[in-house]
Image (spheres, rainbow, N blue to C red):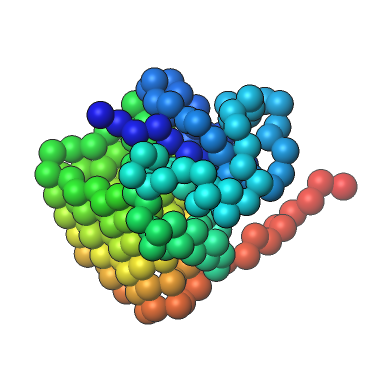
Amino acid sequence: MSKPLIVIGSGGHASVIADILLNQGRTIVATVSPDEIKDNSPLKGIKRLMTDASLLDTYSPEEFDLVNGLGALPGNTLRTNLFDYFSNYGYKFQSVIAPSAIIAGGVKLEGGVQVMHGAIIQTNASIAKNCIVNSGSIVEHDCVIGAHNHIAPNATLSGGVITGDQVHIGTGASIIQSIKIGERAVIGAGCTIIRDVKAGQVIVPARNRVIREES
């Protein structure tokens, strides 16, 4: 039987996650947010906890599961840190799978993975803990994705791509087959990657340049 859920965060990503869960009939009993919940958020009206300590004091890991509602930005480790912090207290993070996502047979998803609307994960791919496979992104066959990755909307990973932990692959980026991307690397939006990327490297596309302006 599924445990009731507590969502950490109340921003845009948390709202999308909450909308998916509520439409799937899941029970959200509280959200952790120091900020007021916006009136148009699916989390509006749900009990708001001001601090992490309030969660620890009130909701036991034996009775409640968590959902990581924080988004993931390049170089920002808050989502990872909170996942590790609450995991150390014995809490389990629930995975969230949007109904329009396509997940093939043989795919392995670890705890807390979030697969958003329209994403596709193909046969024998492996996605480690606390990853976001965002809207419309494609993870092809036999990819191995490290922990705490963010594969942003409409990014495409061809077959056999391997990433380390805490990799960010930006919106619309394309990675050709069998590429290896080291931990903490950042692939900028719109990049096409045709060779391996070392740990910690930041790859950005050519800067936009105005060629002609109308007078």
